[in-house]
Picture (cartoon, rainbow, N blue to C red):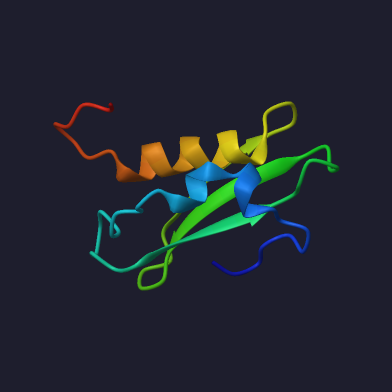
Length: 85
């Protein structure tokens, strides 16, 4: 992960240990980028393919950075015909 907040505490964001599937379009490696922290009003989590640069972003004002990360990872990992668990 790059572009992470400097004061990021990984114990506060369990979603960082979730496996991120390859890009659904090209199969490239995906990267999770987090912005914001518990002291900022706006937080967002982004997953971007390093090959084709497709991206997905989830942002929140009142939800935690962990919630943003879990949500964007669940959306990125979902494929047509699969049910989210």
